[in-house]
Image: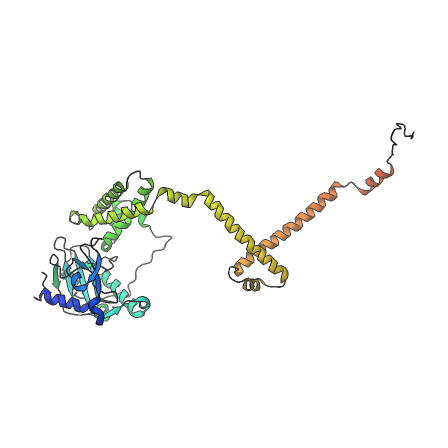
Length: 393
């Protein structure tokens, strides 16, 4: 069983944890998420006391945040905290095999996190403190804190590093809260799918090892799925191999000790991609000419109805402005729509007027001059029937 650095027994630590989950009269009915590993294995909600026997637990209830937990995906030396002048965590929970750790910070005043309260200033302040402390620690920025190493689990090495409980102001005193993540311009930022060489992948952020692996391999899996001629199991195994090879290029690799974690990432990519990406369904849904033509006809019919309605209103109210027409016809007839429709109507009327002028010109052009018409009838000789010499018989 785990012991604190000051000799505190695990029973005291257990009571300390149980107290942090206290949310009032109904605490005995509270359930938190716990699991046998970080994947899907027996990942369920259980009563708090039962959950504390599992390797991974949720550090907070669904109602408030009493613990801030950070994931260090590298060998962690506690003396780094002194060197960087950072606040000391309440617990440091080590994995003895890899030296990776979870740092638990206890909040003096839990932060309420239900519903619309996430838009409030206290919650935003909490998020700013978390981001700044995560950057200062060099922790995994993509770690969501939902499942953490249980300080009471016997296979982990737990050290109670500090007896202090921190307010957000106490933590912020050691940090630069002006730090902001640089927003990537969607037109100029380099896409993750462009990772094609070991040098580019090795430049990924140190604290987001698993996320970088996932993003690097999933784009390759999408391309493979479009060209793959294999079974589902073969495809999933290919994704696992892809993750394994990519991990070797990582500056902080998982290695053979975390083969199970590599397999989980590969299977997650493989099963989702196989189920949601199908070559035939994608090509039919996006490039079916019959569907496109049918959709185009529907849109054209709707546009023609709107045009006729606007034209009828203009005939009844010839002095109405475009904005007045838009307000009178209501939803679906914005000022922009009315402006475009009126331009079409005027263009159609102008084209019809020009066509009528052209038709009149063609008719006039077919008739001979008037003096020719007159001479034709005046000089015409009528020959009676039966007399070739012009004399009737």
